[in-house]
Image (cartoon, rainbow, N blue to C red; front, side):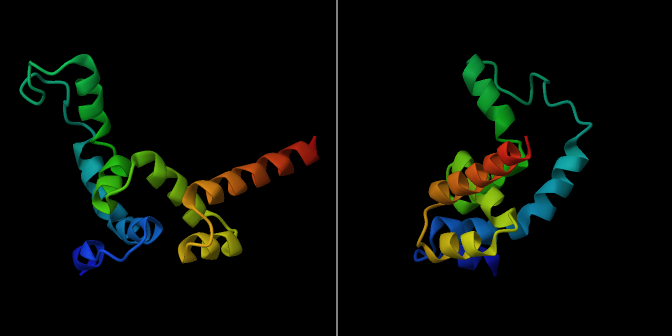
Length: 122
């Protein structure tokens, strides 16, 4: 059912990310199972890949990267949206989910709010 929701063309990126987050336990479990496996063996990565492509192949194994692919968004956008969705600021979450505020603007607002709190403590 989640696959059908992700296939709908009228979902915004933040809505696709919210749906993809429901897959997180599955990907985390798989990552935990693969944790002890040797991923640097030559038969896992083709010989003709360059250094940057090898790094990219390693990054693709990360849970967030896989979930970003599921949601069809950039991994950085996914990371920012996850921070917004996990925040305690319900007003900000609603504005981003409704489309009134972009993901990056919501993330900046969230991180600036935290840095202001830290500067007030000092």
